[in-house]
Image (cartoon, rainbow, N blue to C red; front, side, top):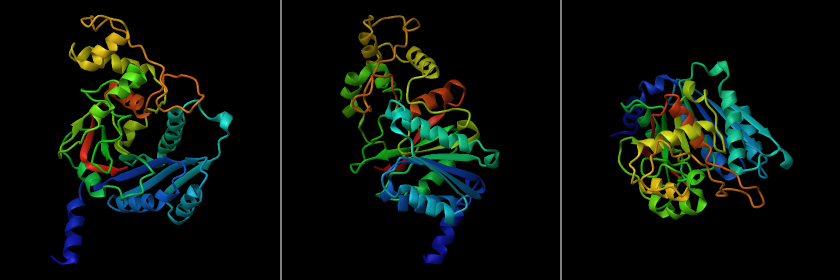
Length: 318
């Protein structure tokens, strides 16, 4: 097969419904100088498969050349909206998760601009991947899958092909995070959860990320990220708690944590969030923190946008 025909075949394969739409590609970063060339190449290659694309990147407090490199790109590529700022230490939030949530919300606030109203998709990505380019072919495949979806998350893996982004991960087997079980219990199960995710079909989850997630723009902009627990998250966990089997291991651990009998009436069991320091800086107060993606997905779910999946073939290499 000659190169010209192969290139035409690849283009024809992905000249599809998804490619006739516009995509908004978003991310936040800090001190990611080494990753910038990979990010730029990935975004421009992905964007070329769509009718049009735009980019929103927010950065703060980098000590390297990250802001300079992205400014240079924005000057060359009119589709790129780059925002950078220096935030004083006393202006920062009191937890790492809150800092990241605020940065992502800055991006979402810009994504709400009416100039993007005809953009169907919004991709939120971490911008610190510097080993391989993004899985462009698999991203396009995900958009063509027949299932209805509100969010499709990447399979973020390590060099051993093991699923790595466990902090954002919640599913029917492991529905509760450290904000429900506390650090000691949650970390105890870390090795159990670190497994390989295979297959070529969508895997339903309560929450995930894996370094990249695809949303419908008009859905995600209704909601926001939070690095601490929220009332929507409380309601979401209450619904999960009432729907899982009485003998579910994490449920039993939660009941034990609250000193409740294992056969408790789940309709009366309260949601009691735990102070945890899983990702905190030393010296910060104990807070009810959580991965910023979890409250976002909880809010989406309780408002009717809970079709959240991992696409195993869409791999991001940490």
